[in-house]
Length: 413
Image 1 (cartoon, rainbow, N blue to C red):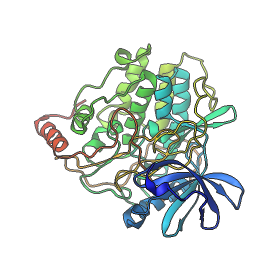
Image 2 (image 1 turned 90 degrees about the horizontal axis):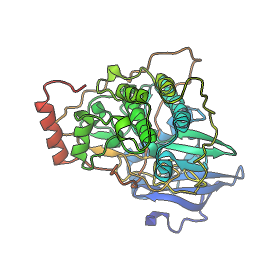
Image 3 (image 1 turned 135 degrees about the vertical axis):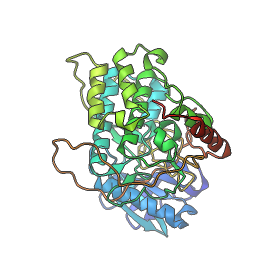
Image 4 (image 1 turned 180 degrees about the vertical axis):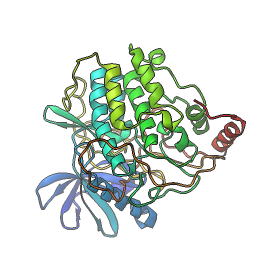
């Protein structure tokens, strides 16, 4: 835990939120369990560290997170309750969740059952679809940013951290984005994102495919450790065949699903998150087998409360907002599990980023009008799993990617 969390226990922010104990801490800030003295209820407080609190770009992104999550109202998105400034340090008050993030669940149990995978994926797809309909591309979907919250005998998956999101309403790429800079977490980046090119909602769909692979197979889809090698694996090397590498038997239909979900041509991916989950259900579950939406799975029992965010996961601790990532451009949310890796902020090599066009959205469906969203939520920090997630891609990555781009005669399938 960083020193910026020491000595603050018992402090009351803006006369309302009493800090009880830190849930997780990172280089950019700390997430606290706190009491709302006005309503008499527990909350999670995400508070910037003193140094980052003076950085205007970080502060802007911090507020962006609060505004985005608050506008994107969904039972599958962590709820933002309030935000403010105390002693010139910004904070966000969030719902306090009980449970663990998906990354911690996978570390604890290994591959999920087909029914649990579909149940969790359905919740996540619902949140992602709503964000896409509002013109928001998350850009940092990963297991650390999916929190499995417990509510009595039910379990609900919630998407965390929209801090590096690209929004349509704001007409921006998201706070902290710069030309030629990678934003996100490398193992879950789409090829276009890893090359520093413009992205749209289909980049999130790639990430969902990689996450589903992990749930079903019990291992990562992208296994390289060095940043440059990761980029090459994402952009050009053959992706693994689930049924050939999984720790458990996998239906052949899931192989086909994964090929479409992670096609290197965005036009060949599923048309929406909704279409993805419908196809996933058909691939993993026998005809007629139902999934009890929101029901706690047989493996969900362990950790108790945990803070929501992609910060280091802390099993058995209440979920609150996610900690902040070490680099202003590398945001990572709070999660209820141990400290996990923060997203990548890296120079993509010689790939020249395309100028960002307006965010495109998936084909419309017969749904009621959804409220528009102006901003996106902030991503935080989290060093944590075996595979490195927080990295800065320097000369080597640039050289490797540049060499591939120059020698590749055609776009890989």
